[in-house]
Amino acid sequence: MTFAKGYSFSRVTEGRMTEPYYTWQTFEAALAGEAIRWAGKPGLEAWSAISPATWLLAEGLSVEPGQRVLDLRCGVGVCGVLAARRGTDVTLCDDSFVAVQAARRTLEMNGVQGQVIHGSVGDTVGAALAQRVAQPAPSFDVVLLDAPRGREWVRHLFGVAARVLKPGGKLLLAGPTRGGIKGFIEDASEIVGPCQVTRIKAGHRLAVAEKIVGQVANVSHDQQVCEAMVHGQPVRFATGPGVFSRGELDAGTRALVETMVIRPGDTVLDLGCGCGVVGAVAARTARQVVLVDHSAAALAASRATLELNGVTNAETLASDCAEAVRDRRFDVVATNPPFHQGLGVEFDVAQQFVRDAARVLVKEGGRLYLVANRFIRYERVMGNLFSRTTTAYEDKRFRVLEAAR
Image (cartoon, rainbow, N blue to C red):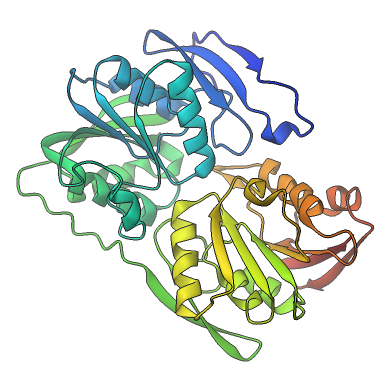
């Protein structure tokens, strides 16, 4: 998280809360020659500073009143504010529920309007979201994309852009060189239309693609159904672009589901559910399972996974960590916490997973199962919150820690 040169900056904390992670803060800076405020908090990829990619998108944004602008990965929403100030009809999307919350706050504090959607317009894995958008057919003049990690996910978003852009419409694409932007530019040329670099700054590139008449996106966005054996029983699961454990059951999740102990009558929280395998396996024995994740793509995959396995005793919820269920109580929390944010590594979310688990577990017999790479040490934060923490499983790559209230 870095500031572009020449940015002024100030911060105002909104209220006093017992947990810093959930404290929303207000930031101010000059962006594309305009003063702008935004809402930020931990859990976002860039929240306390304007990223170079966002700076490039803002500088390259050229729109006219009455045009329709779509920001496919809006983050905190600052580019949406700039577009709305210029008289456009703005739609902001993000796969992250935390980003969606931030963008709504940012629009409000800047006194502008726009539609904010958790997901991507036109996603086949989230078709219900598309129904909330007026004119889902090609109708946007400009699409913005701050490129995420993962070429498959980026190509998926290019397919969305190609479907919703008018002929002659522009895709503005920005991202870091070390994040693969050069390859993304080639993909944009293939999927959207001719794409050329227009700006380079701080190891980042801005490219503009123009949708050509008759261009048809040749990208599959369907979920993939996979199967794995767990405790000698098959479990089917859905994956898709942007979903962790793409194509197969990853070794860490396998270690978690084969180590956790679920008893009849237990209520279980699958915290950061990803494709939903943990929740689906837990539901075989548990009385009730709740699956939460910040990612719209992950929640769509989890819902499909539950359906594939005939699970009827589970629900899925969009949530910032365990915020959506912090007033509920569970016998078991199972989690494979994330530790990547964009191209970097950060543990704010993972540590909040542990704190939230301690909050929602029942006091007598409540237990947390957490899988992590061997090099990540959660024992200190867990030891401060639980009466006992032990290693329930370990191999050369992963450990499953069990903590009890």
